[in-house]
Length: 399
Picture 1 (cartoon, rainbow, N blue to C red):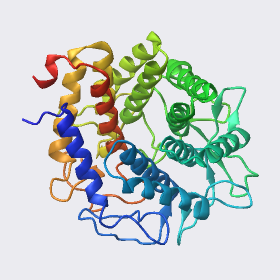
Picture 2: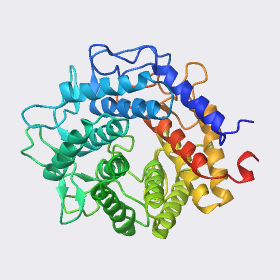
Picture 3: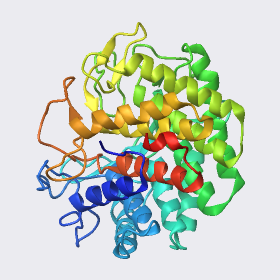
């Protein structure tokens, strides 16, 4: 039986993920290729998405910082240069959502959250010029998206920044919370930590209190819940309808990261509640694994099994176990890994499949189309490794 909670297993697994991309991902002309089939072949050489461009910087900055290869610092630098030279627009200063044949210069808070994360990670590995860029994108977020009366961020502006969309969502704010934590860890600027703490209180506390303790995805411009937005699109990539078990788990992980910085029992309590509700409603008792979304009445809204949902869930489960010592969270950690190992990890070519159907079978052969760079899986493994480094795990870990 695999020991999913061992350092050796996690280090080896990280290496296999990195190796899937290693031979072909670097585009010497700029940035990284972003569209891979299951076997690692590239099916689109030109299209580039801001989410992938920034997440690759995260991957390679962390890989360098954690000792997986000296060349990863150069790769992170390469990715950071592409952000400034190709994604950033000189007229407005914001970063284009998509490049290539389907160019999209819309300004999304979600995308800029990842620019902030990338610059924080760059600064953390010694790229000193990233500090000014980090501060600049933070100011852009404040100027263009921050709604001070609520303490959260709007979602979308037109390409000239003149028009703010009425749509409001939690997803951008969740990743901004993540990015502000990273910015604080890189700079020790308390303003970033306070921003992350404020977002956590709003979404995991205030907004969740009017949605049966769970975090809903979509809101009107006044931040009242929009229960109908994308009701016909429960499988949407960025704005799915329904409660997302993966996002409940991701918020649980972020709350526990905040707790590790400044201890607060509320963080631990809410993290446990969110994770437990996500597993209660999202775990597929018939076929195993965690579904993509469920409706307010509890039925599955989208029963596909996504790689990132399971990665965020096992990271949250292990953090909860590390903090509380509750054996049930270690059991969940192992259960999630067992399903993932059987159905989501590609043992032939490396990395994780992006999506499987309810029974765990293939849906397509597109392992990493734009947006998917195994940032969730790498990040989750590193997060568990951090807990293993910081604690003396009890004997149950190898039981």
